[in-house]
Image (cartoon, rainbow, N blue to C red):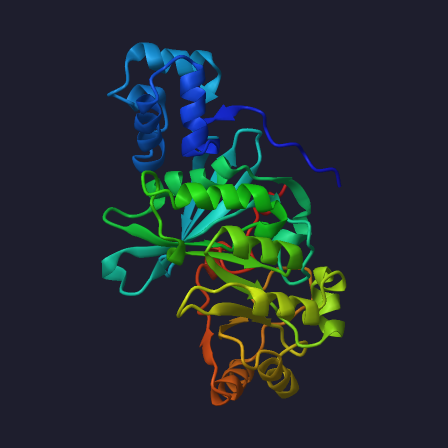
Length: 355
């Protein structure tokens, strides 16, 4: 499958604050105008130049004449689950679309959400238990398209609600799109812009070892690793990336990752009935992670048509959890949210419509 190039239109959300200042000065405009524009775009979420009311009309016309737009995406359909989860279809300028999920957290009355961000249109890694992996990779998203998901999703949050955590766990492998993901993190954590703390951002990866090392040097975010097997034979079968970076190399990279004080790595483990959910797997997982600062997130597989896996029985999930907990690990079982709207973990990607 050929990978489509990133769309060439110039969007302000693709610019860092410094890059925007350089562009504004290059147009012969005062540098402080860049800070005004940046605040309108990233902090206030204004999507058109007419809404930037403290900018002279001539400046807005200059930016438009220079070919700039405010954002690359629009909010399409929003589906709401019976459990309060909301899945937003994000329309891209080139006609493609990705999905971003708003997951309610804590007391529903508080209106707090975690947003699950997509980083690619499709995915190249072909994890056998993930629907997105069946789509192949069309292209990477730009930094602006990633940030735009956060900006436009505010329209999908109920009145009074707030998105207080961001997780790169949507469509695509974030570290395969390393440069744009890192640039988006910088924009999302810029105090004068979107303003998230790095402590409230988590990047999940299937195990690209060199990029894990690089991420630890440039972005002090939380790291989650999608492990999902305790032997190379099983992981090779369900996650082809393991043939390049086997479990031993991956765990070595996790041990090198420079965690800030009092933070832990998150190990995600999708439980597939009869494949990786045995007592022996639980014992091996405990041994593999011994001495590492981790929390383990068990995820019973969320089904979709085709791959031939089965969701494990509740008793098997509970036994797996109990074994790891007795070993002293912090272990959670991820509650399935958004299943009725295909918004649960591993289900993202628009389904083909019937003819």
